[in-house]
Image 1 (cartoon, one colour):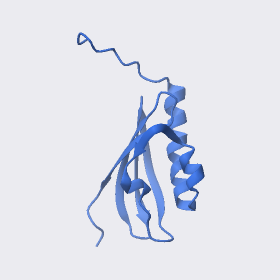
Image 2: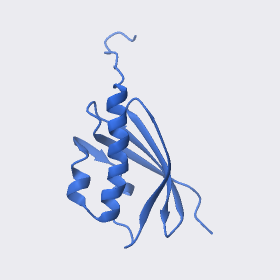
Image 3: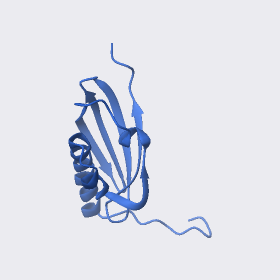
Length: 111
């Protein structure tokens, strides 16, 4: 351990599982345009990436292919339809399993 730095305790599997549920719900709320529902999943003081919250073309939907979670990190892999744009979202969870932050990475542009 580094002197002067507290050791971070990883969240329990229950908190990680709750975070996975919140990630799935976040996409459902965003696709439905339910900003209040979406906001209820965010940790106070947290800021998700602009790519996730940025308005998309009407009818755009997130199709999640895979979710991988470990501790306070949840990774969602999928594509936006109908554009077929691939993405990977990396979420950081709060100690309570709320969504604290997200960074989106895009795959190559579809042909």
